[in-house]
Image (cartoon, rainbow, N blue to C red):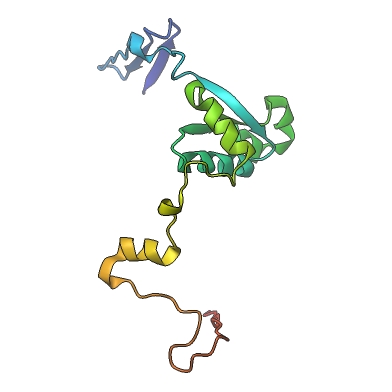
Length: 156
C-alpha cells in the first residue's frame, strides 16, 4: 500500500512524503524558483478552442518565444465549461510579452527577416538532405507533361 501526503508550506519549502512502510522522501524547492519580473508568466491572449491557442503558441515558438497553453484539456473534454474557466489561455514570460503581442497582432510581418534570410523549399531540402536530395518536378521527366496526379489506392 502506497500513501502519499503533501504538506502545504510556502513555495520555497514544500515537502512531499511517499510512504510505503519503509521509504520517506522529502522534496525541497530553492528560493531561486520564486517568480521574478523576468520569468513571471502572464496571460497574453485567450482563445475559444485549444486548436487556435496551439497555433498561436507554435507561431511564437518559431520566433523563439517560450509560451504555454493553459486549460486546453478542460475546454476539449468539457466545451460547455470553457467560458466558466476563462477560455483557453496563452501565457508567456512578461519580458517577452511586447514582442509576442506584436507577432500575434500581425503574424505576416517579419521585421527581422531580410532578403538574405529567405530560402526556397528546395534549398532547404538540399541543405538538410545533402547529396541524397532528388528535386520534385512539377512535370513528367519522360514526356514533360504538366498534368501530373497521384493515384490513390486503397488496399483492404
